Picture 1 (cartoon, rainbow, N blue to C red):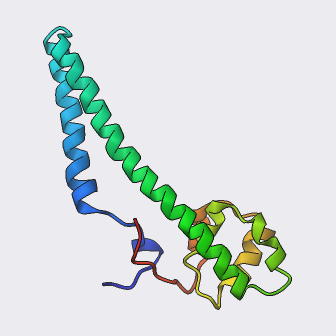
Picture 2 (picture 1 turned 90 degrees about the vertical axis):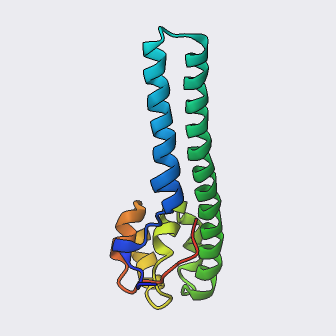
Picture 3 (picture 1 turned 180 degrees about the vertical axis):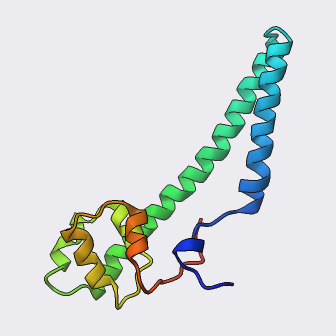
Length: 144
């Protein structure tokens, strides 16, 4: 595995992103095409509805997995911060949003206290901005 950093940390699951989703989108497009060209027959309407439902199931399944992952990261980061942050910052841990905790997830233990203080003091909210502030990347290869 190559060294993980901000530029390459996003996870692409080829079977999902490059196979399943394009097939589901193609199916939806074809179903809509058939609906238009069959003058809205019952079967064509059902095909479009089924295609929409399949696409929604796939997207929601992915979204549910990412939501669970975010909850686990929130717990992990709160436990990690409880061990690493200096005494003056520990009472401020509840101030962090999930977005901030996800952004801070990739900061090394040595860098985390300074970066956490900066995120709170400067009110940096965007996870992408926080990830870009990380100097020493702590890789995470086990993600949804």
